[in-house]
Length: 180
Figure 1 (tube, rainbow, N blue to C red):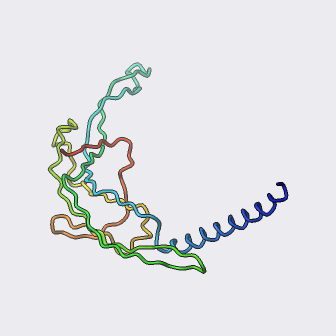
Figure 2: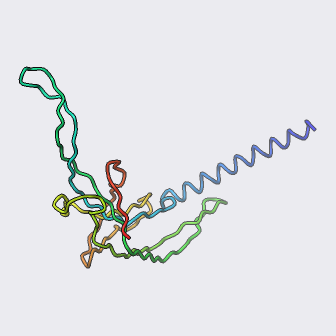
Figure 3: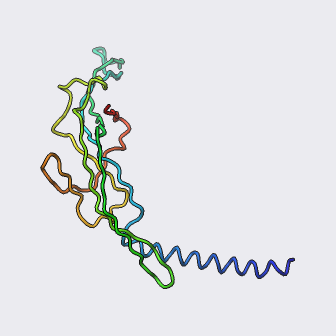
């Protein structure tokens, strides 16, 4: 039995080497195309200001430090999902080759359309005077932009503009509101 383990170990080594070469070939092919694509969004982000109380040490008239409660203002962002979202796409697949190895790649033209309802800041207990409408933004996240060949274009109510990669969704202070 021990004698039979020697050829088995040799075959296992050959298989590992071929699997590694295959993985390298597929990685080489797909490096120019991008990896698996995930599309997140659109999400409407609207900054707003809020007030909160904080305790700070301040100098007293006698020169000693005393703790006082002060009111401060900060900015956060409320995020809203679309009430309706439609996604359509046209996908063509293609097989590319490196030596004896194959990898499937694809091209897709994806169109998103949707409708946002007017944001409800009452649910967040935010006054309309505190909402910073001029700084509102729409976020669409794509995980690997190497796979995009053309600019991502946002058409907001008939006004089209090319957009660049950016995401503001990962700020821990922000609140998320869900439209009903």
